[in-house]
Structure formats: structure tokens, C-alpha cells
Image 1 (cartoon, rainbow, N blue to C red):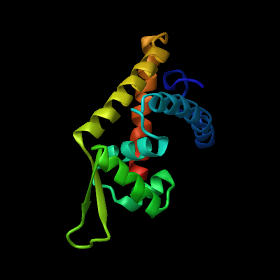
Image 2: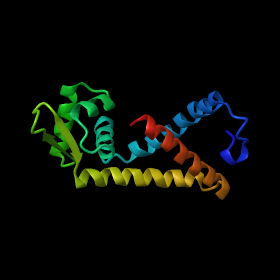
Image 3: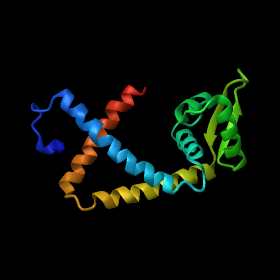
Image 4: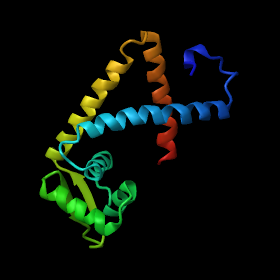
Length: 155
């Protein structure tokens, strides 16, 4: 893949850019997933994924968490019960609709997610350490652009 600073702006089609994303993002995500799972504080993968999801979307609903992890509502409810019992999550019933449950991360849950993220970040930093400052800057710029593009799409 050519870096942004090394390509002409006229020479890259939308399709070529999309192809690079499809080829590269899964590789990076695989490394991130391995690192995050390696440091999941004794939690099962679904528990850890739920904790990470709620950490990034505080106040998310039980339904949204179930959809994100790929569990049924009853299975997610049991999983959340376990995380609540461990002191990693809080669940709150809505005052307006008792069927609506919102989730938030406790300090202990936040610490577990931050530790895993920090260890994964350290691994990624080691992976890019041998790149030139110019290439690291190009990656950083590209990630910011992608963040802006896909944050808008997820709004």
C-alpha cells in the first residue's frame, strides 16, 4: 500500500481506496483483537467484548449490547448479571420504561478495559517503531481521516 504522502491525489480511485481498506483493516484488527483478548482479565470473550462496547458507548442499552456481541436478549441479560456481580458493570432501569435497561462501566470495569487497551497500544507502537517518522506521520494522518469518515457514517 502506498502512503498518502507518496501518491498523487489524482491517481487513486474510490474503488482502489476501498480495496486497500478491505485488504488492510482486517489485518490490523486481527492484531488488535489478539492483543486485547490476551489481556482480558480472566473474562470470557463475550464478557470482554461487552465490557469494551459499554465502555465506548456509556449508557448503551441491553439490546444494543446484545446486538453488538451477537447474543439473544436473555443470554445478554445473564452475561450482564455476571459482569454486575463482578463489579465491572452497572445496569439501570429506565424511569419511563422498565423494559429499557442502560449499562455503564464501573471504575473496575474501566480499569480492565484501559489496561487491555494500553497493552495493545504498546504492542502496536512496537510494531510501527521501525518505520520512519514520515511513515508513522502518514499512518497517523490516514487514521484521523478514516476516523472522521467513519464516525460521520456511524452517527
